[in-house]
Amino acid sequence: MKEKSTKGIWKVISASSMGTMIEWYDFYIFGSLAVVISTKFFPADNPTAAFLATLATFAVGFVVRPFGALFFGRLGDLIGRKYTFMVTLLLMGGATFLIGCIPSYETIGFMAPLLVLILRMLQGLALGGEYGGAATYVAEHAPVGQRGYWTSWIQTTATVGLFISLMVILATRNLLTPEQFDEWGWRVPFWVSIIMVGVSYLIRKNMDESPVFAKAKSEGKTSTNPLKESFGNRYNLKFVLLALFGATMGQGVVWYTGQFYAMSFLKTVMSIDSSQVDTLLGIALILGTPFFIVFGWLSDKVGRKYIMMGGMLLAILLYRPIYKQMYETTSVKNKTEIVANTKVVSELKENKKQTMDSIYTTSKEYTDGTKFLEVKTVSLENGTAKIVDGKPKIETKTTININWDDKWALIFLIFIQVLFVTMVYGPIAAFLVEMFPVKIRYTSMSLPYHVGNGIFGGLLPAISTYFVINAKEAGNPEFYLEGLWYPIVIAAVSFVVGMIYIKNKDKNAHI
Image (cartoon, rainbow, N blue to C red; front, side, top):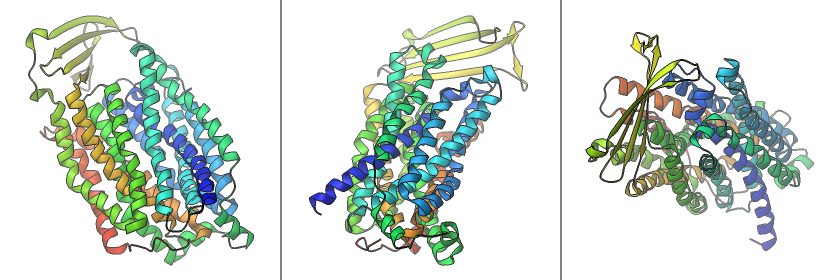
């Protein structure tokens, strides 16, 4: 590859990557702050229901992504790649900033969750048009035989976006007191995004249109009806469905398990301190992110199919052993308590509704340095426990601070999951671009990608958390593993379809 083309493509990658990274940052801060957000925008009477409602609202942003893929994909194939993902960037950034401005449920009632839902849908629509534009734009600039390597840089942006969101949240938590963060500090990461979006907009504004699309447009070979040609043509529709069920569906659940469900599992099921979880995940992502490039490059040598299928198979076989080991590593049942250091403090405290709560705080220490804190809040009514649905209203919050040996063990187990992510996700952009002709590429590749990631992947945190809660209430001793059945089954179906029907295409073919 000539030096000139190297310089050109790095400019393309930096412009595309920064915008895509910021859009993923915008999307991730909602998921990362789901536990906090559930207390702000939903009724506080039932914390579990509020958390599930937050995850469902988070999932809605993913569910609408295919519609964004259709709308913006059509625009991208009609008017061009550059202008379309300029619009998606501004739409995403504006929605994120406004989420940080919405008053709480206590202030405006049900308008709060309704406004959040609307803005999440706008985020999802924007993201639905973003990825296809960025991936197509880079692939159409990349030299023949190197599309896997160059498009894999785009693949890193989702993980980098998650990493930056974790670091911004962590920095905000450390600069503020817990009370300040809970009161208003959680809004700061949403507000920060508007600055990043402004910078990205200025960078993208100076980009040129994709040469492949520009050539097709000058020759009059662009599509006049991308939706009809993509999905009304049986031959092309077959490839759309194959891309979905044989690749992106499995890739989506592996990706969200390794990055999002792992985080949710550590915080809500294992009760690890939120700041510690953000740190663990951040380190694992730093270690794992270079492998997107490695597997993208390798897919140029051996083909996309076997790397993606290998990642799915490893995930299917190893998820349950990995999560069992994660849970057992920090379970206080496996640790020795220093009984002399156990403290139980009870107090009466006025809550925000100006009624009284009886609060019992239990702190424990263990010989390996682990610290356990349980805060049990009993809502009172006329001096006795308030009854809701026939039971006393008791909210229990557990926080575990773990030692460095356990931290490194968890970092390793998360890193292994990130490796599976890099295997399935690193080659996927090049794989999808190569499946479809230029005139309908943006539309055709965007839909299976966003159905796979948005529907199958985006629903994972809510569905898996629901499975875990049900199994726990049913008394299943391994309740914490039940949420894994969803990604395992979806990935298994995708693996079988992919192995049978997907061909290991010629990586050196022109697109």
